[in-house]
Length: 138
Image (cartoon, rainbow, N blue to C red; front, side):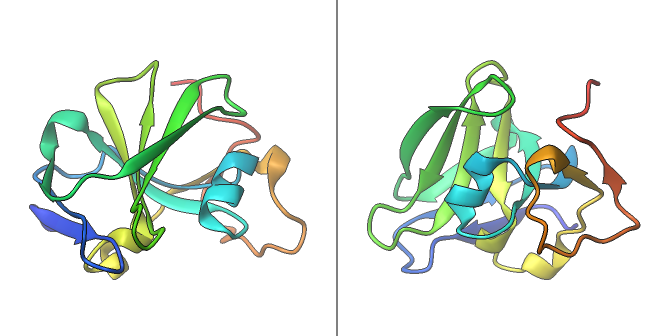
């Protein structure tokens, strides 16, 4: 993935730029991600929080106690509803970027599927990706 890379919401009210390569690229099948994406999973990139910079606007956040036990906050555009970012209270040094919000989402190459214990039976998953019933332990 080229750096820096950028993205934003559907209406253009929020724009961001990231100056670091993702530390992880994944598909999360937890119920919170299903609800947040409106689909079977959320496809996302995990990046260092210090590398992410908001260029325009700011997301509105909604916090929940996730399947992982962590307090997670999903950031979305209050104008158009586009899901953009995520934060985990217990991991302040990382940010999650929703792959669909990237200017060039084809760069995103997920390497794993998480929370298969919550996966929908109608979802077809890439058999080549590493699978985790919950989340990786390291």
